[in-house]
Length: 89
Image (cartoon, rainbow, N blue to C red; front, side, top):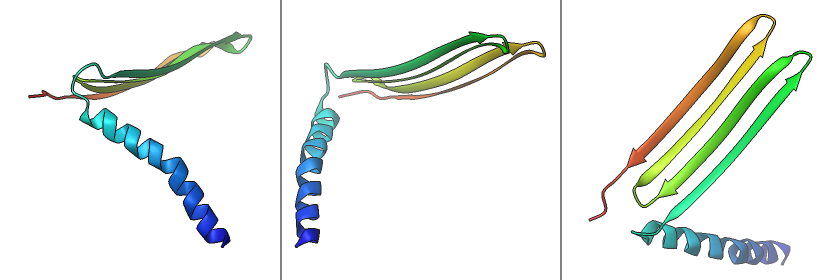
C-alpha cells in the first residue's frame, strides 16, 4: 500500500511538470525563460567574480558560465559557453 501511495504522489507531482514541458516544447512564439546567478568576493586573499546563466527562447537556447580570480600570484579565469538555434516553420 505504501508503494502505491508513493507512486500516486510521484505521478501527481510529475504530471504538471510533464504537461508544462510539453506546452513549452509546443510553443513557437513568445517563449522566453532565463536564469542567472552571480557572485562577487573581495577580501584579504584576493577578489573574484563568477556567473552562470541560461536562456531559452523561440529562437534557441544558450548557456554560459565564467569566473575570474585575482590575488598576489596573478589573475586566472575560465569561460564556457554553448548554444543552439533553430528555425520554426
